[in-house]
Amino acid sequence: MRYDLNLPLNRDMIKDLVVGDEVYLNGKLLVGRDQVHLRLTTELERDGKMPVSLIGETIFYMGPAPAPQGFVIGSCGPTTSARMDPFAPTLMREGLIAMIGKGPRSESVRNSLIDHGCVYFTAFGGCGALYAQCVRSVRVIAYEDLGPEALYEMVVEDFPVIVAMDAFGASIYDR
Image (cartoon, one colour):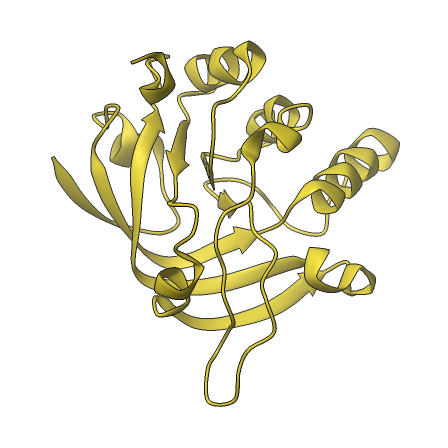
């Protein structure tokens, strides 16, 4: 099936998604990798606060390349999701509803997807230039000192992903 979804998501929007569904996302995504996840969870543990609410948010595991002249962003392909696995269950408890990356996830992430009614999308490795064409704007919203590892907000249009793990625990990587 093909779905066109507007961000932010809610559980009603993703409850019928199953592994293999084609999804085109429109709206604001969060963007962050390892260092962002570490800081978010560290701040949450320290004082119960984060610089952004995660309720209904989708995060793309990506570090953007510098934008060539005339472009909003450079290549922006996904990074390996397993590096974020230690942090994902905590962030789902805080309201994160979807993640985008590449590669399989741990059993603890699978269990958290089921427990919280969340979804994991896969983006295509090697397609960073294609994804860049879907980006309408990008800005740093926290942790600017991390450079390309900062927490970004990115507005996307017709951003193609595939459901890799659904809210029922099915995984494309089990096939």
